[in-house]
Length: 248
Ligand code: 13P
Image (cartoon, rainbow, N blue to C red):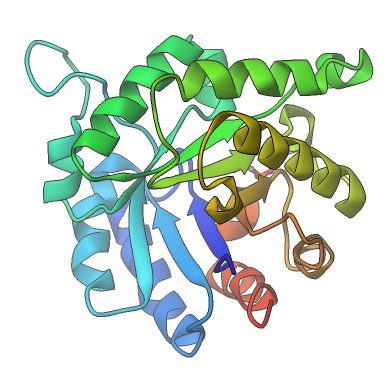
């Protein structure tokens, strides 16, 4: 059995004050949900505030990115040790926005995961195809390439995969439940062919997830949770999404 895992990726939203307001409202809404892992990934600058407020709650804390060196002259970057010191247990790596706007390659993603894992951080690895790649029937090739490059020389310990079709991110277009499930099944099959313990890996879906579509997505056998952007910015909306995974 894989425990459902619902994660909020806030992207470049919310000041520390807004993070505090969200968390104070959110914690009571999800206090009784014990059969779902729930995580919030605010911006770096709000991590310590979030960590203080989430202590002794059932909500985990993650970062949205990390650098692939331990320390040194890398202006503007943040190391795994800093994330751990700020209270993070998880980090999101390889989001399509990082790949697109910050030129992150699978090789860079692989280096980030290796360092993060060596320090004990759990990783949410994002993969996904563009609309053009899907329409030209290259989805599975693209995903295989991202998986083999990002996971080179790594086991699946401490890794969650987030399948986020780029065409569904922030567009209001969700993959259908069946489309998402089929792609998740492909990802698990790839993992099973190349690594041990693929059946234990949680695969989240991401891309316009909201309270209205979470139950359909979670009813699919290969969908173990969601990585949520826009609909995670309001406490009641993200609480409904988390509750939608309860009982699976
Ligand atoms: P939206 O939920 O806003 O489509 O974003 C998805 C995403 O990119 C989460 O990482």
